[in-house]
Amino acid sequence: MNLSDRAVWHIESRLGEAFTLGDLAGLCAVSPFHLVRAFRAGADCAPMAYARARRLSEAARRLAAGRDDILAVALDAGYGSHEAFTRAFASHFGLPPSVVRRSRSLANLTLTEPITMDTSRLVDLPAPRLRDRAAFRVTGLRRAYGPEDAGAIPAQWQAFMARADEVPDPVPGAAYGLCEATDTGEDSGFRYTAGVETAPGRQAPPGLETVAVPAGRYAVFAHSGHITGIRNAYFTIWNRALAAHGLTARRAPDFERYDDRFDPETGNGTVEIWIPID
Image 1 (cartoon, rainbow, N blue to C red):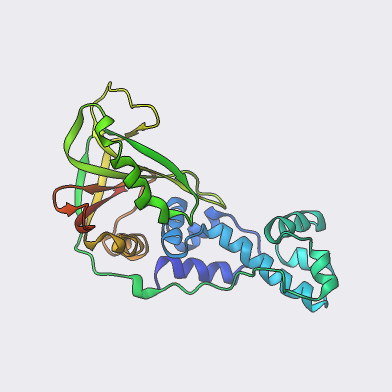
Image 2: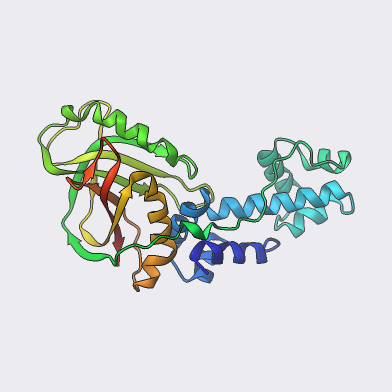
């Protein structure tokens, strides 16, 4: 069972219990950072956001059936009071639980069903190389994304390439796609920077930013083929490959490295994926 499936199993088994991201990560024997990255790679949402949506969806079904009062449903869903449950329910569905109970209908609700991860997304990747890398800086276009927004990254690269000549004294040889997790909480997102390496002391042009990447050790995986397959490579890395090679991820930016083996015109070639490890 891959990591995301283990997380889903533990969540579904504990819908009526209060647990934290740390609790869930402990059950899965990984760090919260690793769990968020693995789950997001498979489900396009954070694990605790999925848990909240599932709890509220099952609560909505009980309310529509009309067999239980709202407080009983709230307590069974892991909420400590009628008020807390009502706030969460109304925020998620756009209407209070009393309306669902009174109407006996789920017609206006978008319910979240149990996730089944697509194991066909697991791909064969060569064993990673282990590399130590000194600290460096990437200057480029930096944008924030929610867990489900990664589809906008190709357009971000196009926008950066239109301004790449503005970056002063870039280090030749490669471009970088830098990913920083912004949180490991319920609605975890990330920041992505499309850019190039730059020397210390150079000022980023207006509208671009410079991100410092600390020194550290990395597992370097190679994705070969069309760039659209890189999401499957990430799914495999976070859900299977790191554990298969006895590697533990640490919380630090990971990045894609695009050198002359990758053709940006066709989207084909080899991209290195650098994952920070302990």
